Amino acid sequence: MVYLKCAGCGFEKIVSFLTLGDIPPVNAFILPAEIAQEVKYPLNLAYCPQCFLVQLEEIVPPETLFRQYLHLSAGSQQNISHLKEVAAHLAKKHAISGEKRVLEIGSNDGTLLSFFKQYTLNILGVDPAKNLISLNKEKGVPYIPEFFNTSTASQIVKERGKFDFIIGLNVIPHTPDNIDLLKGARILMNDKCLLIMEGVYALETILRGEFDTIYHEHVYTFSLHSLIALFRMAGMKVIDVERIATQGGSLRICAMKEEYASEVSSRVLSLLEEEKKIGFDKPETYLLVEKKVAEFKIHLRNLINEEKKRGGKLIGLGAPARGVVILNYCQIGKEDIAFIVDDTSLKQGRVTPGVHIPVQSFESIGSNTEKRTFLLLSWNYKEDYLRRLKEKYASFRMIVPFPKLEVIEHG
Ligand SMILES: [Zn+2]
Image (cartoon, rainbow, N blue to C red; front, side, top):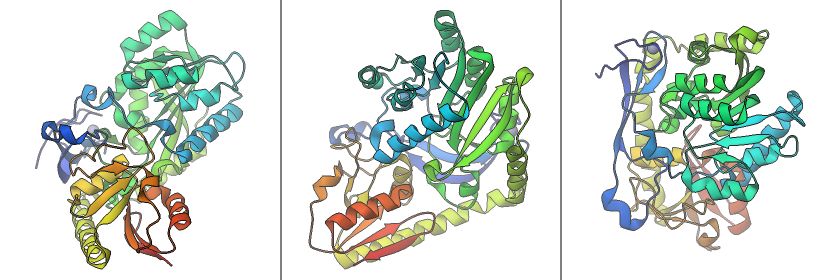
């Protein structure tokens, strides 16, 4: 068992409970020529028996993960529509218009902010990815290519003043030093500023044995309990929470400066109750996870072997980060999957990290007459892929890994 210090509360004996092995960073899709230089890092989870923050035992330097970022907000139609809805929802709920100033942390290719432009032109994006500068320019979104922290925030407040809304989608689970991130946000907040943060809410799914949200970029897996403690350390109060469907289940937290915070919504209290019911504060709950994950691997490998006997190598659908975790942990490689199709053009022509399966465009699969079996890696886009496959194939089979491992047969 490995003991390290808790990044949330400093407790010195966090407990290792899940070993996924050595895996390369899941967004590091490489060219075939770069395979020899690929670097892997241990991917193991521990929990803190004092504050119950779930955390990686070893952190990959953020410079390695986020300077060249191949995951684009505009990478799928579904995500573009989601971001459009987020902008419309927030603009309506919080009356964002005219002079209101909106900052997005981790703004990626500027898709979300571009939707805010119909409500206010006072927008700014901050994101460390240097390869996304031109995509932001094309959308007319002001962009600072830096990590967001107290030092970046101090620079911004000098040059541009404070903001009315600060938004960060999936930033908190990705940031090693969240207290500094939130203190940075605080520097840029007006007294009435709302800080809206979305993040994958994976504690319950991980405890169920759905391990594919675990990767090096997700340093932390939060509960609402541990989030409230974290925001408090940065002088902020969580006043509302919504559960949303994004990425297989996420939380949208709304916080304010503690001294100006309005009343806490009843949704916060009822989610805290729910967390107690799933046993997030009991060691037994964690100790069961490794067994569940190992059983999943055996089951999936058996299904793939059966399908290979039936009709040859499978075709992968989607190459998301979570899919890369499934492939690596279950040791599914080129001998199992002929190629993977994905709509993100930056991933096409490259190979998946670790197991090196080629990635191609969806169009490249043609309309084969043989009955093929697909492995759905983007399982949160199941309906989307089913619809697209039905347009091309009269019959096919599809393995769906989560939320329940199953094979769907069409025709
Ligand atoms: Zn702790």
